[in-house]
Image 1: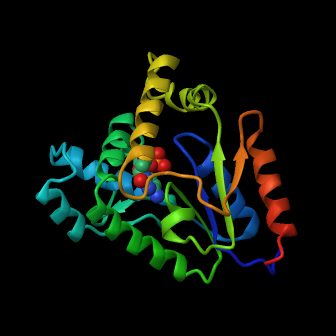
Image 2 (image 1 turned 60 degrees about the vertical axis):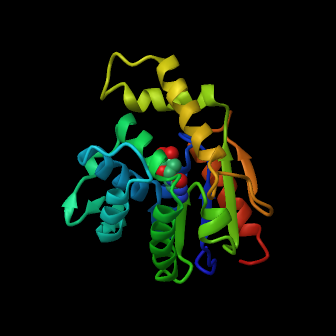
Length: 224
Ligand code: DC
């Protein structure tokens, strides 16, 4: 579909499949893929590294201001250091979600994300929590992926069991529920289904079926 111009914005809760779906869509379309969660995880990494627990720490804001974060090519470069291998842990994910409650931190990251999107002339799939509502709300294609937290916990367990063979499904589900609650109930830019964004329930769908459905929807769209 060479004449389609995005961006395509994709939001959803933890482990809703947005990164896998977004990456596959970007590959099929020949577009850039940007997973904005990686930027928040880079801030989560700074928090762990500097032993900062609260998001209203002045020092954290200072570090965020000075930080250069590059998420291109699905590598995460923080101040020139490749931290990709260190940001997948539940601890970093949790700190990322805490950092994401700060309006100052969000402002800095959203500005960067808008620049990334603008540089692609619409040929980008961007995924996160506020992409459809705040970062690029005028994107012609906007989707929200969802599924029950039990199904999402099963998916996440398969990814995490390699890193931690003793982890249980109830632990994973609890971590997902806590993080979703924080991401959906925060004062600034909470995860929400905004008007005009298409909800796709992925509960009983494979990755490929979700991708095919989105490709069909954007192919049939009047803006194509
Ligand atoms: O998508 P992820 O699990 O890697 O994201 C980590 C955290 O970052 C998530 O719990 C909330 C935050 N986040 C956000 O607030 N806004 C985004 N656009 C992306 C992530």
